Length: 124
Length: 106
Image (cartoon, rainbow over all chains, first blue to last red; front, side, top):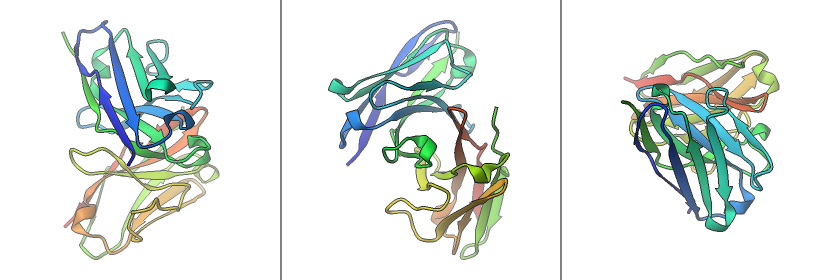
């Protein structure tokens, strides 16, 4: 069974930093592309970042470019999101999500597996 | 940037057919996916590549995509289908989500 477990959320001050982690199990992590998606309280889904299985390809939403960094450690079956220069509008539940199938999300496969999310609150 | 537009809400009676639309410029030239999110839960993929269902998704869920509009259709809607639904596409190296549609079964 595919499992994705996020951690690292919490309260941060504006301008501060947080590092989110996602530990994967139930599949060969090194073969799968991964994403971070967030959802502000009472709002819709917003994609944050994508990283390919080998870390060769990385994409970011414009809203986080230059402030957030996605990375992974295939030996530890782990995905990370380093969040710097946090803003109030970064307050959200952050989900770790796996491409449904190899081949890339641009092939229309979507995000087939999601974690339970971790809440990040940015406030002074 | 690319945008996907969904109606904020759709209502349907139990047993009837619900249709949720998603509009975007030349969306039919891209693949559309759909996600269901029940209150307090993580999203679940219900349609990928316009019209394919992942294993475990009931047959009453179907999808289509042509022109500027993708449509999620739920036939014989059940109370358990009450949820938020999001469409999603890929454009210019970004994942784009629609704003979401709250489906009410009443």
